[in-house]
Image 1 (cartoon, rainbow, N blue to C red):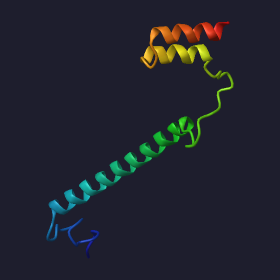
Image 2 (cartoon, rainbow, N blue to C red):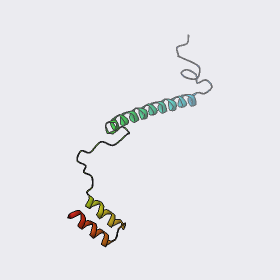
Image 3 (tube, helix red, strand yellow):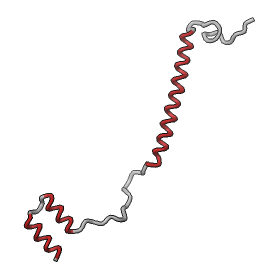
Image 4 (cartoon, rainbow, N blue to C red):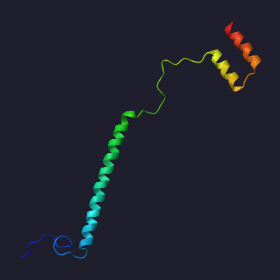
Length: 97
């Protein structure tokens, strides 16, 4: 009477692969478990980052935004060198009067 289990290389007898087959099976099982763990971690971290996600499209409207004043635009043009000092002073006087 035979009291063992499967005899094709696994439990009782070793078969063609023997210990090498058992080790390969163990390596495959460990790799499978590690892969599942990595996938679960990736899914969980992307779900946590989901609260920071914003849809693409126009940015939200800033209600406190004020368009630049004419004087500010004039100062920027002078700073960029688009107008000289004399023209800047003349236009500034015009805006302030």
